[in-house]
Image 1 (tube, rainbow, N blue to C red):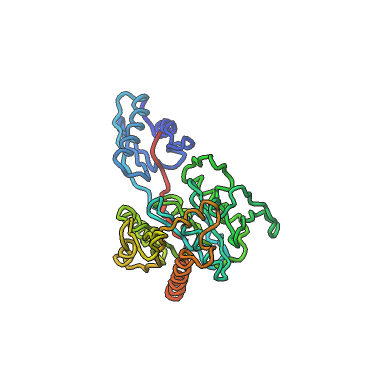
Image 2: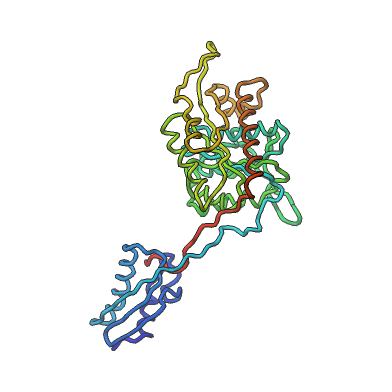
Length: 375
């Protein structure tokens, strides 16, 4: 039997993409097949231009065709598919009643980002603003504990014929977290798309009401969740939290760099230095710089971003978070004063940002269409 175009295509239909659902012919990866006697030339479009991927596809095609025809010379010409630009969500899905969306991030874990978010929310609320907090730390939600709402469950409310989640409220702050839907000792073992879907539901399937500020407590680092949030919402500005030590500053620098990427371009309102210093109760005027002195403040100068303020290392700050009563609620306290100053500085930078810059758009991530790796 001599090879023909129809026979070649029928054989190639036995080669499937890595999703296991579509073959390379049905998925229109094969753009042309030319047969000359015992020579076959195949034009193939792929979206993975690596040598390893090309060799894998070529080997699969050779194995299939040479199992049918003993003496056949197979040549595969690769063409890379063009990129198409699309957003993860429909642009029309917006939070119309939320005035400002602030992303609170940190380059690494353990620097007190969630503590800062919780106390910043309290400080803004005491200034008279309506505030919500979205706990986007899918794998380590801690906001429910910090607001003493661990055992609470969001209820459903009817809004214009649609069922919506009603955020949990405490201390005047509206809160949503994946922690409301999991047990304390239950690990969330999700891949990026599952985590992103859960976040989208908490954002868009909830009745946030009218908010002056929605603070988003992001997970540490720079990854899927960060991109999903910025693809879903027009972030007004971002805040980076760091301790003064060099190992934290390295990652904080990366966090600032992420927001400044050309295809992200979220304004950085400033850097907050947590655990800035320690003052023992017996020596209230003495400051011990346990993790280094003014590291985050110096980093802000190096990167050309504002420095919003410093938070001292105070035992009551930790204790307040553990019992679910943020320290900024305390009257006449060092912590309350620190967060009042940080809030005022953040608002000043936000007003300046809103005056000089247009509304932030949801970011558009370029995605590839066409063939992926072969099984």
